[in-house]
Length: 157
Image 1 (cartoon, rainbow, N blue to C red):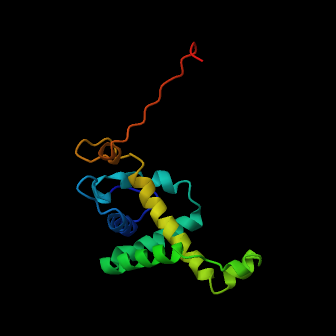
Image 2 (image 1 turned 60 degrees about the horizontal axis):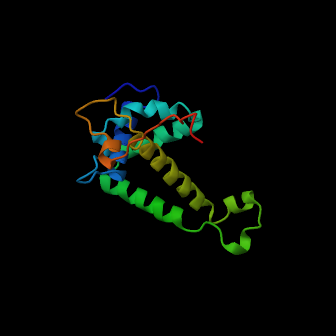
Image 3 (image 1 turned 90 degrees about the vertical axis):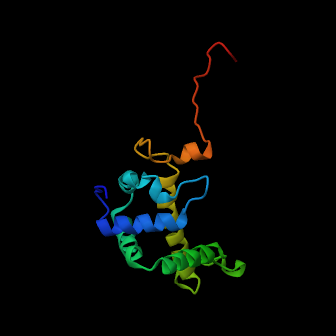
């Protein structure tokens, strides 16, 4: 466990479990917990609003004690509901506040949950940050991704 300004030990455990469910690893790619990218979670959470951080902390603490099957079920449900159309075409001209209170308003909440959870995990995983530890697999190396920056030659058009 690393020190985090924003995550409690229980929330840290929940994020690790969430990451391993979303990114369990393959023969070519490491699983989330093997990359040590979670050590950089504060770099993501520093730019997050305090209310959103508190909500994330609550969700992660719940995920730390949920059975893994339930966690998978919640993530599956959130991804399926969030990909369904929110509003029928006939009511698209109604004010947003009216729609949010309607029967489809809950779909927007599931969509936000899905987007927020995946955003944190995927941002950490694909960031390429793993503290430079040689024994820790680097996702960019496993993907064969290499960013190359070269200056433009001034004498070439």
